[in-house]
Image 1 (cartoon, rainbow, N blue to C red):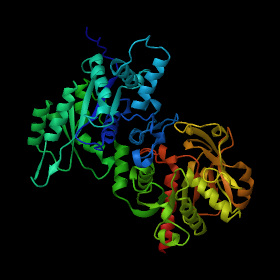
Image 2: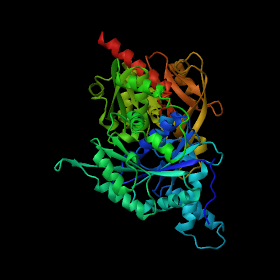
Image 3: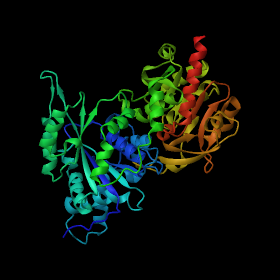
Image 4: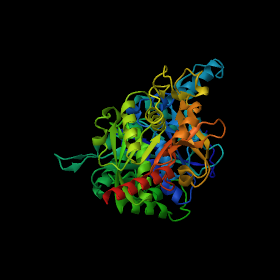
Length: 546
């Protein structure tokens, strides 16, 4: 018995990786999605991660990089940030699934007796749940094409159930309803002076052993693939020579969609899925952004003070938001990460020399707190543009309380539960929570902005929503004291009175947000807080050059 064909159903694209990790499946998936979107199709992307954690919410940033938070409050893989930045549409809980979440759901079903006493197995129960999740985004027929990125590398033990689920789902969908793109590496051996195809051949062979023939090969390479190499890969991997796509190292991730357009990846995909191009790709906004990115008229140096500076991916969305804001200001933004724990009152002036702005990054825990306080005191007293995000905003409150209000013992309840002045306190809704994973204040919440404030001028409106990930909040018992001294709460949650934005009245730019604005910055819509912060740093640079 064969599956029934349905010509109107959503098409599925599966992206696998071979040879090595970190080849950029997320960027290739996002780039392809951008091209298909530019041709008039409704597209979304989802990420399936093979690790057993329920989500990356409890993972150390050194372990997994940034934890990206969606509008609906899901703690997800950082690749979802790429999806949103490229497509300019929000993702959700359904866009990121882990092995842990799959097994948790199946085990809960078993405990409830859903399997009627049958033995629960990887096949069919785990693979059925994976397939259900893969089709979940299609339940409302909202998208024409769903791209599914499979984390890990083909051949990894933990990836096997996902590969098997793809094999089954492709059979169920029938012909022309899905395709597999295999991202692989074609290394260059300097000693031999040539590119080597053997790793790709072995990777495809492994995929074939699992019952999947890739339709398209996307080959990461440091050197151009000549026609001879393409033919060799096509012959030994059983794909058409036109389906061997070169993905050469690019100056930035934002160049990749245009490189894939040049390689005609989108045309090949549409052809294999029996779809017609609805229009010529509309990439004018993207090209305008790239033009500004590559032809800046000014440059500025900004310090990012944080805990996890050794791993760039720990602050991925912040760095990308600076790229968007830089292009909006037609400026090159040079961001240098500084270890908060290496800064103190004695060296802060020297460390911050040459920077026109400082961002104090989000994070958890006491490590580096003293360095962040010293940093914020210095920029506040020397009129250097400052931007604080989440913990960065909270530390700005602590610094102001200690050095302006004279509350020497002021601290966050997170850092010191015995402090006499907990100007940052544990949220009421968090006091009864014991588990760590998925229990913070997560996702989008409303904020009302006071008229006449810097925040109102930045946003150009008084009602906004921003994404959160925190347990601690500004202690409103101290609000009147702060505002009387010049630090005002310019953004307030209308439902619970939570202080969302703080700013200083008499300062060129001193703004802190309890939320994470970097999560909403995209190529098409750079976040206004970042755009205005960069503008303030440019003004500071210009002023100090005179």
